[in-house]
Image (cartoon, rainbow, N blue to C red; front, side, top):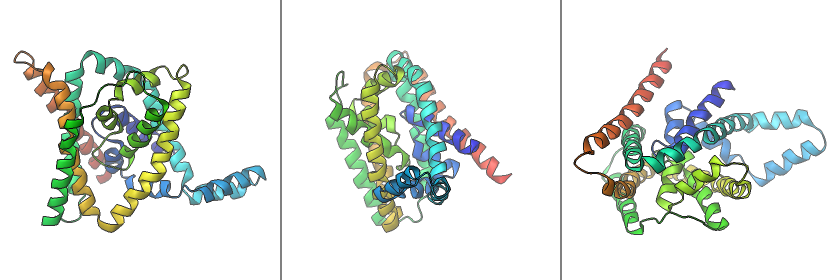
Length: 288
């Protein structure tokens, strides 16, 4: 269980950074399919049954049910995710506010480096799959025309939707939850909430409720799409990720000039190298 917790911690790091996604890291760490399967087991029927066992103090049946549904795996994984998000949110908030363009270029490098991982997981390549990739790209780049305005005092409804869509990163390899928040103009705001956890408890609870609802809904959608045609789904996803990179790049572009372009390229390359090194280390462990 400690290994699962540490894998969750690594996924949490990815969720704080708008670059490599928690879903991509789950792919690299070999727990993606298990994660999807475990979450699709969450249902009102199972929740009611669990509460019934708890109410009747039938802990034996509750334990057996938790093992069958792989609930212990989810609990330890999300404990790791939550720990890293709480610990790193304040650091990332400072870095993003102070070094916006450098952070964005580093994140872009992380995304570019992770795209090859997704590409290699596609079962087959065909003309129709390429067309789905093109469609995803056009959808992603169209987001540039909905350039986000940073939300200073959003409503609880917007906070709920932020949690709902940000959790998609757990199931969509290549897209990080923080990247989605960046597109929505909510990244800085959510980081500020998490860096003052107890003061902003109401907003954080609303965000988590949104994330829970999104987790249940989106996991089922992805499970369905993967079962119908995994290749087309991943191609559309790849295209969307590449196209939507226009958003962070448009934010960083005004801050890049002749004097600092070399540093920005350095951060971009560093992001790519981080993913390649992580992939190399993971593959080395698998071979042992």
